[in-house]
Length: 397
Image (cartoon, rainbow, N blue to C red):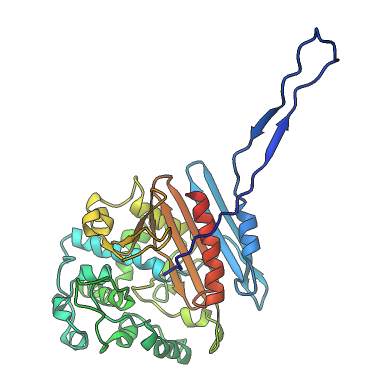
């Protein structure tokens, strides 16, 4: 969750003075007109912004800002510190929770097809072996897993995160799918009763991944590719870990440093494939995914849009995500929806150890903002990247 902070935009303005030509001082001649002052439109220098945001704690950045009649795509800094490889606009990296929207989208598509119901309780699809390790499992629905109201413990909660990280550090070679990661979130106290409160939980999306596998009779990455990635033209995107052979280019390095670790986390993420953070992508594909879901010319049906972010299905998260303190954000299925400066903003960021993704769409102006950083999960990196994103977002608002 991004920090709630307002920052001033970095605005650059210029004034051009156009002076009319003068002739002699004879009073019978035409009077010299007053100078004409023309104020040029304010232009935001995106490249300068990302160049200036490169620091000791933020090695590299890729930024895409796109709206009707305008597109900026640029990069700054390094994709790999050791080799001094420059960051390029086409580079790919794991996108963390920014990928939750594709898991939710596939689930709603299957609901539309009648293969499952979003309001099925999870005991409809999951075995007793798993259900017995989850508080209130008989009352949880698939929808509640997707909108974070199930109450299930998040395996990345402070109390269990270190165990998960140690498992990643111990074994970087084994492919880790939903069933591998799920035990880190089981046999833990519930945050609340199902449907009672919003409590963000990655574990819920792991359960959705297992339910999708049960419904489809195979790993859900195949349906995700055939129904979303290929039709949407997301040609540089894979289901991370599971589809490594389809990768378009090598994943960039990611950097995480705190009191306990100083890591290039790339080896940790090369073999993770989980439904709470399924994608390895580039900025253009991530922009397409969000736009194709929420845009006025969306590539999904009205039924799917209603289930994902229709007003009757939104959950108030109890405070702002971006924006001022008197604003509240809502969560649909895999998406945040927020009104900032009277403009509707859809978004879902992604944060991993060593990687950070921002994925925003401003509906009123049809503006996309997608940014990649190859650092994440550490205060010095996160504060600096959040400052850049707020500057760009406020400029577009």
